[in-house]
Length: 407
Image: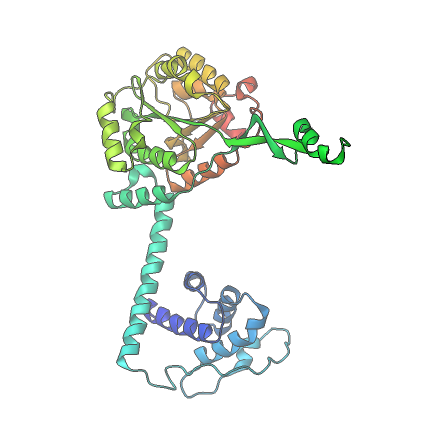
């Protein structure tokens, strides 16, 4: 049976189920099409149980489904053999009489317009299935291997992602069901009782989103990912409630927060390109972090900030300086997350001098090479609700593969 003929028959089957009042949406039909790739269509019972498990979600719909399946499977002008469906099955009570389903194509000839509608619906199902498969492929495809058409699709997916950073507890309090007594409100409310303490209002701490700082590597070794990662930073800045501080570096550090505030992403990235003078140059992570710590650290690292450092770890600078400055950065922020696009490869090992110097001072070492890794990052950021800083990894004195293994 050809794929188009199979889809055509499944569409008729879905129409029949919907006509009987069952909740059969296009998503469930797509699941059925994909499941039938693993089922032998020559066996009626296999097809029956596969369709029933995916399309029937209410026990009361079982009689409806069985009658619809019998009409769907039967040969034209032949009697339906129900016993084939119940081989090796426990006996079930006879279903209650139901309204007869509408006739199928064999019983009532359908005009040319109806056939055209069926063909259009078949084509629509094919397009939906192909779109779903394309999204799944792009979901796990490395950013460095994308074509121009795939890049446009990935940028659209990035713009639709939902970002939410974990909350931090502030020092301010508000009326609520906390553990601290609100003395002013207690005195004010109990004046109506002649000074007797009848009501005991309390206060609770306020919670606000944590600040987020992104420091991205745009050196020559990151050229495959740099442009797309700027789209990621832009979507991140637009998706969060709080302001996101963004920096890029190659041989020196450049702040691009103001440039990313534009409403149009193409114009914003054009302004970034004009502002950055060391695009695709060498890599000096230690010098760039030193500039950030001394020039910007006190301005942006307060209130439990989370830092995303995006780099592949290739560094031409002094590893001793990198170790010193990344340790200073970690002590100044709530959490330091290093995003490495090379970490998505199963063969990758952090053996470069830069990664060896930085690994003991990283709280989370995560990949950032495809859409799936970005979704994992979004889940991780949303879970950062701890009030206290995490236990610092440098006390464990781990490095390299041992560091990743202990994650």
